[in-house]
Amino acid sequence: MVDGQSEAVRDAAGQRFVRETGLAAQIAALAEPVLADLGFRLVRVTISGREGATVQIMAERPDGMLTVEECAIISRNVSPVLDAHDPIAGHYTLEVSSPGIDRPLVRPSDFDDWAGYEAKVEMRELIAGRKRYRGMLEGTEGNELRIEVDLGGELGKQVIGLPIAQVAEAKLVLTDDLIREALRRAKKARKGGAAMDGAPMDDDDLEGGGQ
Image (cartoon, rainbow, N blue to C red; front, side, top):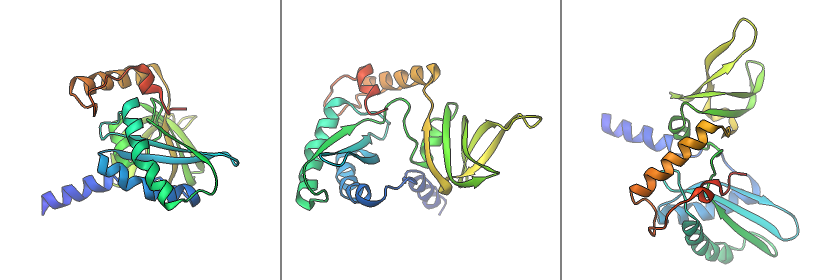
């Protein structure tokens, strides 16, 4: 029973709490199973432009990395599915990218994976009179993310809990420490043979999609 409970906790930590709406949600529903079959995870889907829309699918491997070659693999597999279901009227351009270094945080597990690094968090509703928080991630506890923020005045810096279900958007803040850690993880992934086709990852691969 304990093992079953642990597995359920891991599954919940791996589920995205950020959900698209409208057309982006339709595309996410089509793309996510394709990504899962290929061994990737969906990060988010965004749509920009009116005439000649651009659909950006941000994806990653379970280790958080993604090479240019893997972006091409995803595009080749997702494009036929979108063409078959035709969710977008008219011409559109499909772009597949990695999360980038200052990545969005879309799963509870992301807060644990990047504990010790700075992040910006925006809540759906006011929490203690604020919607926006910035500080050092301290991981998760139960259904909350833990973050050290400066509350100002005599309160100073404190670690507070924010309900993950109420997070509207969260992303890492680009710092020198974060860049070094992202490069370290990329190097470790290369040594572990994590790249699908054996292609090396360079700094440009890390930066893709992080805009």
